[in-house]
Length: 131
Image (cartoon, rainbow, N blue to C red; front, side):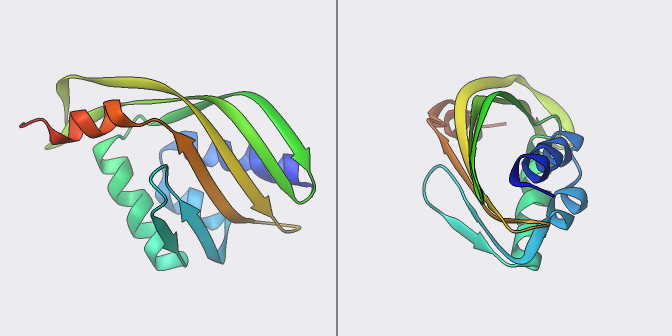
């Protein structure tokens, strides 16, 4: 399987909203780097991180406008968006959609690195609001 196929499957897993499905497509020692440069590494940390994020934003989706592949890496750009949920319910005015880019490094079967590039100030502002 090539990098493009792996990345397309990974985007599908992200858009499924299921942390287990996402992490199953990542190497057991994979690294996730968020837009602030914070890192999660290893299956347990990735599962906990994706799970926590998807509880806050259960409808999180990414829309890919273009993918550039130079094996074993890919760069993607498009949009990310979701609605903040608190206590299992959508927060008032909790929706957001921002331009974003992603870098993926793969091996023959899995994602080794997933890195996000985005100005997520709008998301941080939502999280800082009182419920």
